[in-house]
Amino acid sequence: MISIIGSGRVGADIAFLCAANALDDILLINRTKDKAIGESLDIANSIPSDSKFSIRGTDDFSKLSGSNIVIVSASVSIYQKYRTEHLFSQVNMIKNIAKKVKQYCPTAIVLIISNPLDVLTYFFQKESQLDRFKVIGIASSLDSSRFHYVLSEKFNVPLHSISNPTVIGEHGDSMVLLFSNIKVNNVPILSKINENEMESIVNNVKNYWKVLRMYNTRSRYGIAKRTFDVIDSFINSKDLEISASVVLDGEYGENDVSIGVPVKISKNGSIEIQKITLTPKESELLKKSSNQIRNFIKSVKS
Ligand SMILES: NC(=O)c1ccc[n+]([C@@H]2O[C@H](COP(=O)([O-])OP(=O)(O)OC[C@H]3O[C@@H](n4cnc5c(N)ncnc54)[C@H](OP(=O)(O)O)[C@@H]3O)[C@@H](O)[C@H]2O)c1
Image 1 (cartoon, rainbow, N blue to C red):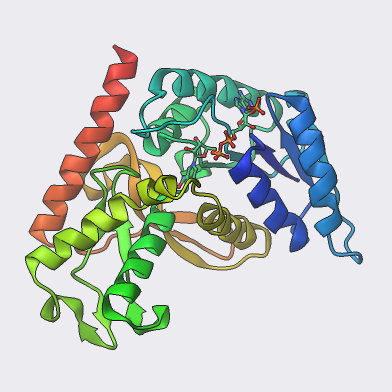
Image 2 (image 1 turned 180 degrees about the vertical axis):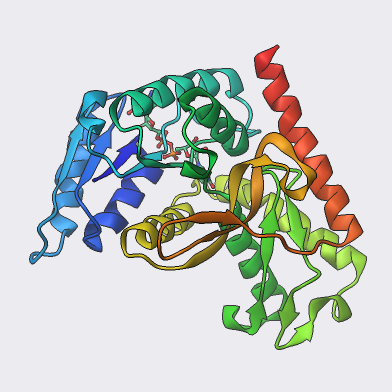
């Protein structure tokens, strides 16, 4: 069973993709019960008619029992200017949810979507004491998709002409866009752009969410698809390489922080952090990014 905690826009969209693709039974858990029930009644009509799966909505966390995969897309309220705006209440919320997951489905794989992503992934893992590879923050793969799209617009080429657009680091202002391995039509990107153009691309990716807000909308479809891909890889035993936030234990020279790094999910469901070569500049930016996340974590602890 796939359980989705927080059936707002993002949670409902993830549920829709899972239902329409008949991945598994789905449970929506929401603070306001009626929303979970209403969304589940609507999404139920998207389940293929030859499927054995169903969807239910509730506010009862004990129904988490039997979940193989738990998605956390709950949010106490919507931030306006910074992802860390509701830092304290979001951390409080994630700790309570972690306790429920530990109590009712301690063997589940947990995907954190809620913001501030890296900080919440860290606190969920610490509170639940689940294996660090069972608590995965999904956001850097969305940032990588945005990077990919911004590059395709910049060079006026289709997405498939661009290889390796990867973002690591914080899902926030200190995110690190890796230009060094990208090729556009098989030509290294670094031979095609200058520092100013790179800076402009970095800002476009960092501020992508603000542009959505400017058009009076919020991020939902991209993150729903990136999350669906991860669920699909676990359920249907598919290899998947993405950037995702995981609590580090020495990888990339970092400890006791959750941050976006390249991760491989193998067919057998095992997860490993991949070591990729970073330029000295990229390493320095990743260090700054981990310090940024660490500062947020410290501010909650102190
Ligand atoms: N990782 C990423 O790249 C990414 C991308 C987009 C969004 N996000 C994040 O995803 C989260 C959800 O975004 P959204 O647009 O879907 O927000 P939303 O529409 O406001 O939905 C949040 C839902 O969480 C519910 N909720 C709040 N506290 C809860 C709790 N303790 N237990 C269960 N449900 C609870 C709310 O219930 P009520 O019905 O009572 O309000 C609401 O339905 C936000 O933190 C957002 O920043 C992350």
